[in-house]
Image (cartoon, rainbow, N blue to C red; front, side):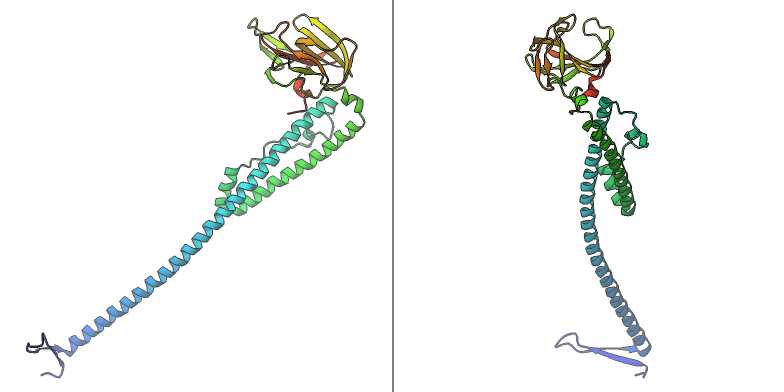
Length: 308
């Protein structure tokens, strides 16, 4: 036997004769090295995939945490968006209220009026846009939110200055305010507004100099400010009419009444019932025709109703 050969003996079974074959040392080494390489490869592969599994497991934990934080931020963003929207709505409501007060008090042109500050417009912040921005870039969202809140803060300061002026005016104009129409004359809905409209009788374009307020027949009609009754009777077109002079050039009219409950020369207070809603005169159904005149000129009643 060559010294370079190895003899391999194996037994096929308990009763069988042993089998024997020769492997050269060279091939034995090649097989050994190959087996070692395969073993190293298998071990390396196991190590690689073990590390991958560990990293994937870590990533899954991190992803779950990020999703949880994202959900929390989304909820927070929705809450902030709602708060800002509510604040914006409140500022808008205050703006409309202030405008009405300035019309009533003739302070529209005041240097402290909000329009003189050169601000306005929408804030451009909604829940959807806020959440979308949050998903893309939280830093940009924070800057945007800060900017919008800063704008709202500035608006609030302007409103505070403006309302302080109005408050000062009111304290010094008690009689004027008591004589200024500022409430609904009856509860109902406006069926025809101030301005040009199509006549319900002729179909032609005509100017409507007041408001038609639809209400149930017999509903209370109230004086919208303190004053004196100057007309209490039937007038052409108006049917049964109450006219109240409030002083300072302001007059209100209440037409189509079913019944007048006061007489000429009577002094009335704001909120006092002066008539009942009806359908008298040039009317297509039960409603109150309400007019506000300033120095004889019909004015939009909308500017003289402070209630929403």
